[in-house]
Picture (spheres, rainbow, N blue to C red):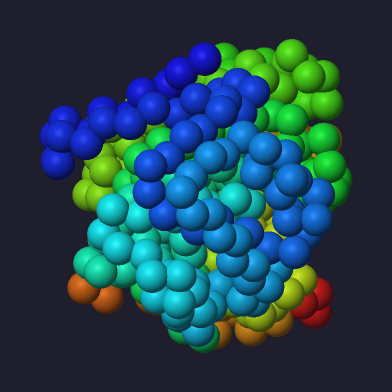
Length: 350
C-alpha cells in the first residue's frame, strides 16, 4: 500500500510512503547507508540483498539518543567526504528515529543538499519520525533545537523489521500512535482500546492509519506553521522529561506518554477534557506497558524549560491540548500559577 506526501502548498514536493515488503532498489549513483550496530547486526544483510548501486558504503554510528548530536552528524558528513560523494549521491537512513533525524540532517547539509531515503526499523519511526521531513539533533538546551525541514525522496516501511524490536521500543511507537488518535480521530482511539497490537494484520492496519493521519497533517502544513504543531501533543512536557533525565532514562515514546498524561491533566484543569477521557488515555498507555508516572523534583525549573520549546514564541509558552477525544486546541498565555498547580500534582509528595 502507498500513502502519498504531496506538499503542493509549499515546494510542490511529492514522494511515496510504501508500506509493504521491502522491494528491490536499484540506484545509478553512490549510496551510503547510515545505521547503528544493533540494526546492522540484525538486518543489514537483508537490506544489502535488496540494494544495487555502483558504489555502496555503510556508515555505522553509535546507538542511542545520547549520540544524537552535531558531533555525530559531522562524523556522517566526514564519511561522505571520504567516500567522495557528490551532489547526485544518496544517503539511506536505516534505523529508528535517531538515525532518520541525523541522516536527513546530514543530507540537508552535504554540498548544500543531497537526496536521502528512509527505511525505518522501529514502530515509532515507521508511524511518525520517518514521515514529514523533520531532521535535527539535540543539545544540552533541549531536544531537536538544531535541524531542518528536509524531505526524503521516498520512505519504505517494511513491518518485517519489527519482529526483532524489543518490547520497550515497540511500546514507544504505540505512544505516537495514541497521540495521533487522541488529537484527530476518536473512533480510531476506540479501535486502539480494543486492538491487539501484536496481531500482524492488525498492526499493518494501525501503521497504515497512523501514516495516513501524519501524511494528511504534513500535506497541509509542512513546516509547522499551523496544524502540524498539533503533533507535538505530549512533547512539550515529554521533552522536558527527556532533558531532565539526560536522554538516558526514557525512550522518546516513553517520555511522550508521560507528557500526554501531564498535558491531559492540564486540559482537565482547564475544562477541555473530562476525567474519564484522561483515564481512558492513561489506561491505553498502560495497556501498551508505557510509563505514566513521573516525579517533578523542581516545579519552577521544569516550568522554565518550557521556554526552550520550539513552539514557544515571544516569551509565551504554547500548549497543545486535547479538547475532547479526537479534537485539539493550541493555547498560549496560560496563567503561570495555574500551570504550576498542575505540575505540582506530579511533584515530590510533601
